[in-house]
Length: 341
Ligand code: DAH
Image (cartoon, rainbow, N blue to C red; front, side):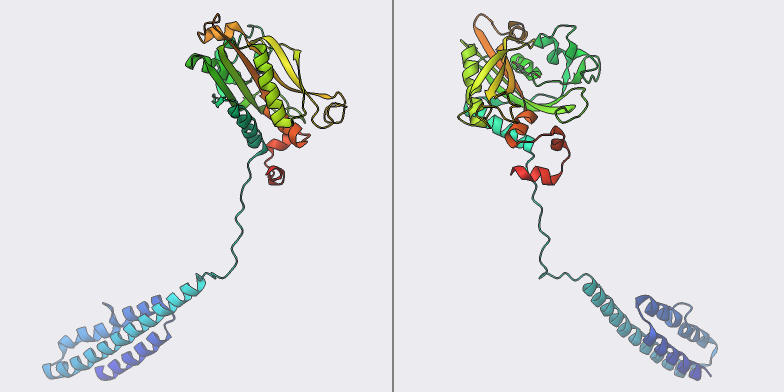
C-alpha cells in the first residue's frame, strides 16, 4: 500500500517541482513534501507501526524517494536562482556606450562678477577686502556713523529693525566702524556686501542690494588722495577716457562730502540714453571721514585723517552691461545669468 503511495508522492513531487516558476514556489514544494508536516515525512513517521521486515524494505524506498526529491529540489533551486540573477542583470544593465548627459556648468552671477571686478581694481591699489555682518547694531549702522538721532533713514519706514538695537544694515558703512574699532591706522580696506532698505521693488529699487564700501586712514590723507584713487577706479572700471567730477553732497559720516560723477562712457559726454542726455553719470558717494567717526575708533584725529566711499554694485553692473531693470538680478533665470561669462 505505502509502496504505491510513495510512487504517487514521487510523481507529484516531480511534477510540482518541475512546474515551480520561481524560488518561492520551489520552496512551497519543498515544504509540501519534505517539511515537518510534509507528505513523505508523514509516511516515514507512520512506519513505526510496521513489523521490522516491512519497515526495513519500505524505509529504504522512502529514503531513496527522499534523496531523489532533495536532488530535484537542489537542481531546481539552482535553476530559479540563476534565472532570477539573469533577470536582474538584464534589468539593471547599463549601456556604457550611450552618450552621457551633458553636465550643466553654472555661471558666476553678474553681481558677484562686478564685486570681483571692483575688488580687483582696489586690491591692485593696495586695499584689502574685509566683510561685515548683514545683521548690525543700530550703533554701528547709525550712531557711530554720526547720524542724528532724528535722521530720517532711521525710521521704521526706511529700515528693517530686528530688535530695538539691531537691524538689517542699510549700508556697508558700518564696516568702517568695525574696522576702526579693530585696527589701528594705516587702514586701507574695501568691504563688499548686502544691504537692506524698506523699498518696493521696481526697475531701479530693491529691498536687498549690494554696496562696496571703502575706507583709508593714514597720516596726511587729503581730499586729493580720494579724488585720485576714485578717478583711477572709474577709468579702470569704465574706460581710460572717462573723466570724473565731484559735487558737494550730504552724508552724516563724512566732511567734506561729495558725490562722484563720471563722464558718460557710452557717448563720451555728448548726451545719450545711458546718461539720460546729461553727459554725466552719478557713480558713488564719498568724502573725508568725519572726525566724530574716527574718534569712535579711538583714532588720534590730530595725526590721522581718512577718506571713505560707498557705491551701489547693482548700479555699476547695470551701467556696465546695459541692464535696465534691477529685478533681473534676483530672478535667477539662467538665460540672464549666463550672458555675463
Ligand atoms: N553709505 C552711503 C549710502 O548708502 C554711501 C557712502 C557715502 C559711503 C559716502 C561712504 C561715504 O563711505 O563716504 O548711500
